[in-house]
Length: 475
Ligand code: NAD
Image (cartoon, rainbow, N blue to C red; front, side, top):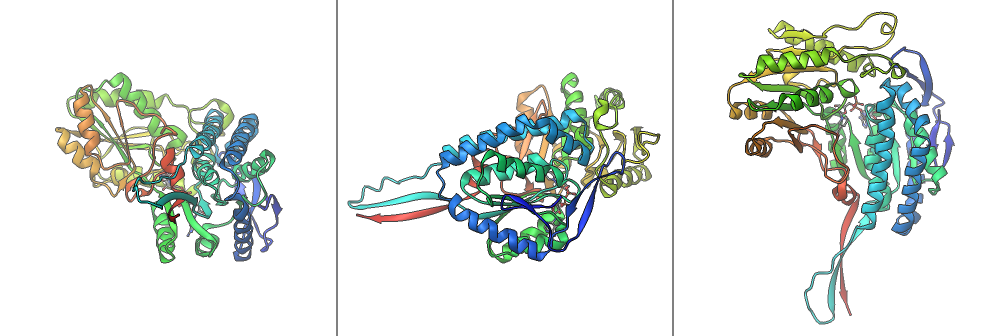
């Protein structure tokens, strides 16, 4: 597929294309354009020109268009979900949910944009007022990872567009096809050409040029912490605005009085959804020693029941997206076992006719882990969890915070006071007490520490695409 620039397909000036592979079978699904610096210059100029009119378009018109795009996404959800399933390998139900939730998020942001307001402080000065207004930040470059290509884009796109920004999207090289289809769909919804463009290619080839370009006012990035640091450093050189949603290594604390009938299914669901390829998944568990054996038994039984397979097979989990992501799991399991962890289930690449050509790793539970092991300290981004016993809640909190990451945390206790105190102590952008579910659209999401800078979602997410301006008025 070609780039999507100014409302139509645009061949890359390099003439180069790369393949998108189906991670279940290794078959070529399609190709994407390997853009170069001249394509970057072209798309940035287009976005800059489109921005001039878009920022002046009434917010009510922008909201109508956004609702129209959300409607089209729902109408074409099956097709979009098929594309996602092919490039990502995730079970169909999960792909459909991604589309419908992303459409909901667009709707939410549209309404939130209508509620954006300025202020006039009551100075009561004769003939003088100060007006505090919000203006769009400008052209936004949205760089996204492979794991939730549409959700993670709409978190940026919906907020930026309703705020009056034009957007240049750079999707992951593993999953660019769904994003390209989305851009086409936005055109069908009636958006002016050039307001939402997609340029594909390798991050290390065009990333710097996208960030450096004088027209880029803000970079909204979701991806690995290493990549995020590089982007943040380059953006800082030019004082450009950033929102960085980066990696995670999220802990769950299961206290002695936890309701295991709730805790075990919630943790299993959240550790292995999308084959563990998401940033705020449960990566490591601290379980009170008095319930440790019973908890493990229940968790292993539920985990071993999960089915791994192709998107259409009704399986619970698909493959890893590529060899590099796959290897994290293998390396971390080997590392833990070499240091004394006990393998309770999974642990080895799946083989057989359905699996041999894909990157399939089973859901894996490692017991008796400790912080000398990668599974407890490094992001896995795969279907492996480490479990470790604790004796006091203070010790569990100290372990949970013993990480450079701070995206999310989880605590299970029937004593709400304990739950709330742990939640207050965890160094994380979001904490769930006694359940785990997807983050809501109307509350902020983002990380402490190395997990990022800034917040997406809610009114906070929209405000992040505006600048505050004070106008002093003398009359
Ligand atoms: P990645 O960092 O390798 O790539 C993400 C995007 O950055 C891709 O589009 C890539 O092309 C681009 N990129 C790579 N190098 C670049 C450069 N030098 N300049 C500009 N862009 C560049 O991440 P990934 O492997 O696709 O995704 C996995 C990572 O994403 C994990 O670490 C995960 O935790 C993180 N993630 C975070 C969140 C969050 O909300 N915090 C959500 C999902 C994923």
